Image 1 (tube, rainbow, N blue to C red):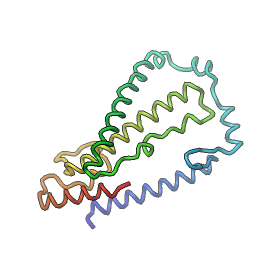
Image 2: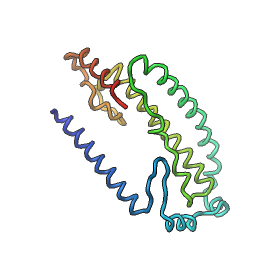
Image 3: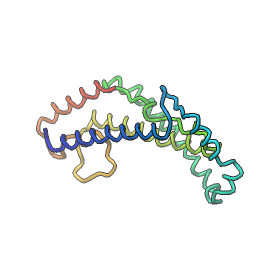
Image 4: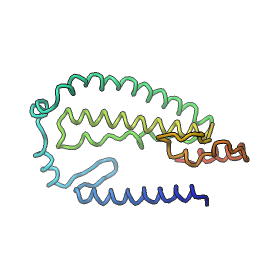
Length: 194
């Protein structure tokens, strides 16, 4: 096993430990997840309702610049929806042709924060927007990562910031040894994924 593979394995183990720790923290906060639904203990639900800012209190507490820039921020929903539709269409039409397993959209775009009873309607809208926007970007990133793995699983010569998880397993820049055989293996691996 190469040093990179060892480090990737350590990262995966740390991610699993982090998930366990986060799950334990959710028990301390007092909620459980049943299917796609989150349920809080009764005492927590009551506390949340007491902590909720009413609409008028919230409106008078925000900076005027936030209200002025809101149309600019929320206008981004148009390109987000458009790219979501286009990339989903691309995936559903092309991935089966190439034998690439599809990315499950609902693993990336998750709506649950708007159910928090301590949020008012505007805060819930903000949470819906951010959940959708960040979820779409993560969803698209995974689709493009699988595309890159299929067509060009080669690292760049220069360091690239914000690379996807698959990138570290790609072929080193300039390493032509058995390139086409390794490319076929990368492609076979894509077909096996969930």
